[in-house]
Image (cartoon, rainbow, N blue to C red; front, side, top):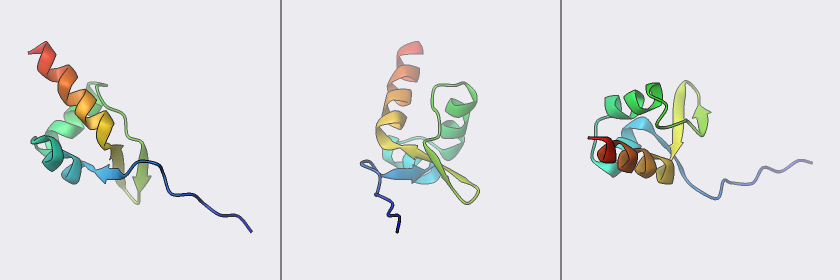
Length: 65
C-alpha cells in the first residue's frame, strides 16, 4: 500500500494567492508569464502556488519598479 504525504507547505490557487499578497489573479498569471513565479503543482486545470514563492515574486517585482 502506498501513502502520499501532505506537502510541507500549503498550495494556493492564483485567486487565493492574489488575495494574500494584495494583487489580482491576473497579476499572478503575469508573474508566471514573466518567469517571476513558477507553479508548484496543479489541481485539475488550476495551477497552484506556494505562498512563500508568491511573496518572493511580489518582492522581486516591487524592487524593479
